[in-house]
Length: 417
Image 1 (cartoon, rainbow, N blue to C red):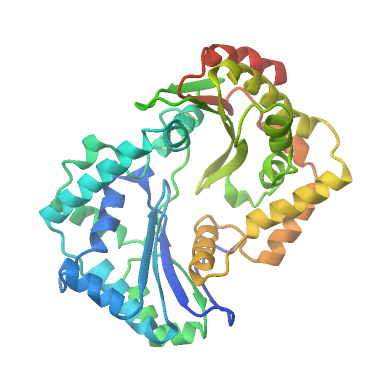
Image 2 (image 1 turned 120 degrees about the vertical axis):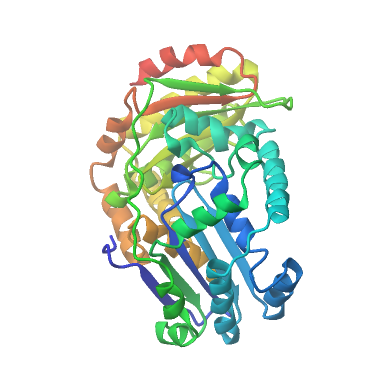
């Protein structure tokens, strides 16, 4: 685990041709005054500043081979850029102009709102997207603010104005950022010489407390959504609320790998290859600043949805109730390590990885993470996972027409709990 004051990482990698640098703030859609306003803010400040029009700013960024990136999540904001090493000073200058010299205009806000509304409509139009972005979150966390999607709703973003953006921007920059940079010829000294220290010192010293989950959960919760567009298949998900990632546990990573860590893992071989119940079954862990949950997701035909539910529940519980063979465990460890420490061969992906670990106070040293996963496989990970299977932690979500599967859920879940 990282120390609380360990908020900055700078790594040099000779195999990379670019430098990426970015910062993260523990502010996301959970604590917004208006749903979707953070996404609107981050979109706005990357388009226009007090010194440059939209075209001037775009040309200025392109002239130096710089590409910007940003992401607003439920509990954090990430923003940064990738550039050639010789233009790091220009990159930091651009970040400084974006964050501390923005200009907000009503016509730009209107354009962003229209584009954001179109994204919302697209996101809610298919069973898979609706399930992943909305349905399973509401099923797992009821009406907790963690279910607020960062993109907001058409109703909330249409009336956002300059005054609201200015106030929210002022609040955001009062917070001290986490910082990470990876790239060729990269060092803290060279970054400071290019203006990094001055840039980071322009933020305030506040540290927002991470939003605690309110635990407003319904026992054996179920949520059903019907997207506006017809689909031949529905999507279902069995969700299990997990632990706070800051605890440094890897039991859920190992569990996910045994279930869905490649084409030889159980979910794929049982659901797709053996029973042909779903084309793309998978399990993934959704981790955020104060919690996590795992979802076993698959597309199903309505006439086979109940069979898919029963089979998947049996598969998910068998993994922690019966011994795991040495060969299967070995493959699962390799898969879990690959997933947990995967960093693509780019400075941007590595920087995003480091920021994600920093902001949740997780271990980021690759060798230590590998050792922790192996240690988890030798410990009581099965007991840990079984303890998570309670009425409060378990939920079910459906998007699309899956027959009367929702009425079958309580009975099916009771058999394996």
